[in-house]
Length: 177
Image (tube, rainbow, N blue to C red; front, side, top):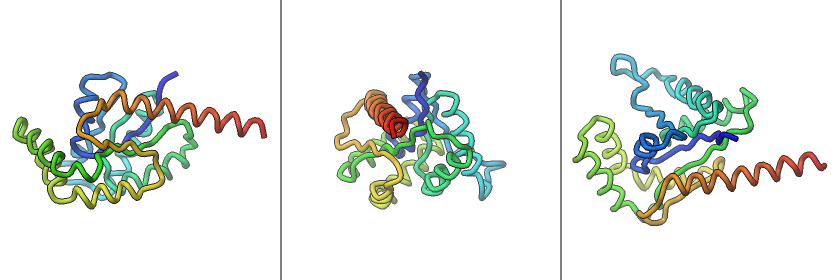
């Protein structure tokens, strides 16, 4: 059975690295959703639909944590009648702010791309507000890293396995009633 999941991952969490090294994962980079350098106001709809399509084919899709993508995805899954895609948020604990700024700064120094500069500015300027917003989003399962030492792939597989067991139990419970 293929795992079907969409994971909203905070900048620097390891989305691109894991997707580069593990064929089960795809990093659907939001920064490329532009035409001639301009982002259409409805870009996130295409982004979400693309993520759903890829996940529904049995892949684990990483997405950015933009609030409007999180707001839009549940309605689209419902509209499409898709109930077997797990959606979760992955982000660092707010106590890791200084570490996270340094981590993303180092990434930018090693590879000064526009993507990495955008991530660095986001983390430097919005970390606490972003993390508080993610913490308050109760619509999804959460995977929060409390220390800077984690194995993203192992931790994701672990939580997705637990979700699949939970979903199976819920399905069996509904069939018994």
